Image (tube, rainbow, N blue to C red):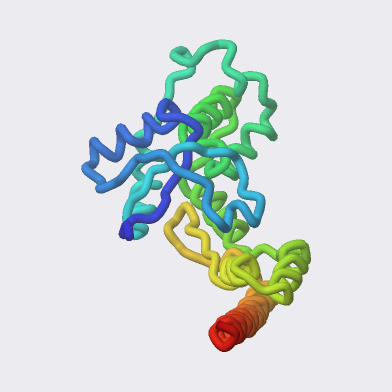
Length: 227
């Protein structure tokens, strides 16, 4: 299993190019590859349909964040005048600075330059504050809302692999934040339900397998005696 964690996801290689350029220049160990849909993403509904990701050691995340902010600068004269960010108002551009993980590095750099051209300047300390507040928001666990908990209990009673799978996902799924920290995706209540779903699923599956083997043995024994 790879020792790397996902640092950032992209829709296409072109979007990742500025990040990859800095990583190569600074000789930061990393991987860039296409990604597939994971089980926990299928259950939670996933998010944007990213196709590529950059992976690196989690302890390098903060260093890379700082390098990218320092080195990724754009000149507005080099940007297409029809670029969609030029139509954004100040509040919308500030929202990009607050959520760089949702917009990508290039949009972040362009938004910052547009704001500065309008006389709105954020210091590095202020940007650090926005970043830390974003990390606090992303670290908050999600509540399942009952949909998959209900499905999990249903399949746990019916028995089978699906109940076990849902229980494991609700109980163990974690996320890596852009700063490299790892947190459980779900809150304690949801994880407790996941543990219960897993326990019931395993017990019911074991009982069903035992009954099936018993029936098979009885049929074989009956046929053997009849023969």
